[in-house]
Amino acid sequence: MIITETERLVIRNWRDADRDLVFEINSDDAVMEFFPFRRSRAEADAFFDRVHSMIAETGLGFYALELKASGETIGFCGLAQTNYLEPFVPVGTVEIGWRLATRYWGKGLASEAARALLAHGFETLDLDQIVSFAVHNNIRSTSVMERIGMHRVDGGDFDHPGVPDTYPHLRRHVLYRLTAAEWRARQ
Image (cartoon, rainbow, N blue to C red; front, side):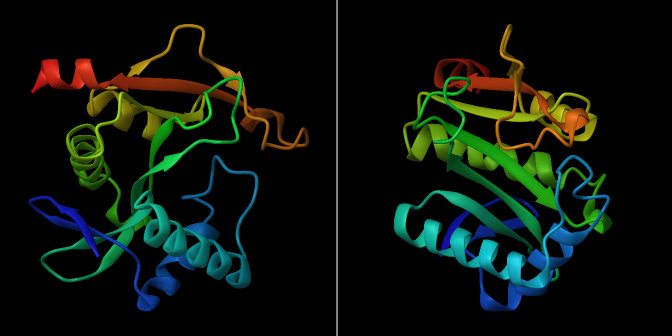
């Protein structure tokens, strides 16, 4: 199932052949620098199965990114409900997030995919707002958020409840938002 396409990317549901890439990015120290865990092969496969079935059931989730030129799967970008961050983010709010294999960093691919998914979220899914969040000093992710037109929410910083206390440097998160009205005004 193809969600949308960009100049360089096909944004689609996962294929079984993508499992190796999912394991690669979820076990890579550089990719997972701002996460308190690395996934084993079994954990990466379980993540793959959850994401794949979530997309099939709801249409939302973290979609595979495929390069049009080569057919290679390079990572993911997607729209998913954040039903676990209340009171920081209301239940039902949709977040946008991404994760790419390091060899594809610095090419504008995350921003390209995210822009297409913002359009999908606001035009096709008729969302009122889309949020994103990251560890406070994750400049790579917050830079993408700013490049795609999101703005940091004043007073929106929070300690992520899913990050164990044993990782205090990863607890503080910044919250970014883009409303449908803001997005349409920029089009």
